[in-house]
Length: 246
Image (cartoon, rainbow, N blue to C red; front, side, top):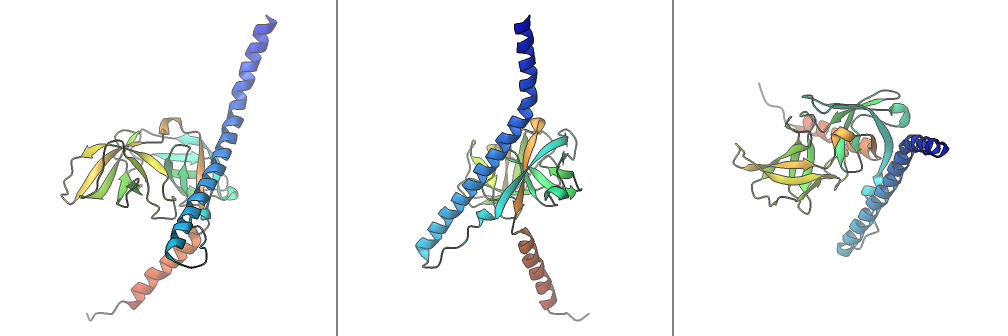
């Protein structure tokens, strides 16, 4: 009887330790991902130095780091799905930050309170993410079609895009939300299109949205600078446009 009691007690204790263990693993994964981004940046620098005798440029990927958060609310079967995190502005979160888990992208932060934040889930047709087939520079737009929470569509691919079932789809890096190369899913098959100049592929998502627990929020140290430069560029173009007579 004592042995059975100790065994049961140990099982219960181990169960409650799983949360701490999972969070520790997520922190370790964040550190490893940051190191990988730094290494990728160094490789890019070395390639650039092969073509120019200039001083070593700063790594573009080194500008990213991660904040760990826990999912406290999540929907997967609604027409528009959202996720709530237990971190907010007091923890450094703000709108337009990308969110990933250990397998792929999750969504983008859009509303932030002091201690909580709401994320537009990838399972929301109002969210589009710039993606590409790994190993190619042809970019498309990933969007959920409201059907299966484990699948999405990669739209607006040029007609000449080369693909095969099983190809990996990753983020393109054409924004300050997600770095280039974050896993998204794999190609399943082609979807019949109405537009003759573009093609659409059905993608099996890497992230299992039904089991989301611990996620990582991506912080881009250059986000504010990029927004300022891009907004100033838009303003400059508008003010420099010639006026037309009524």
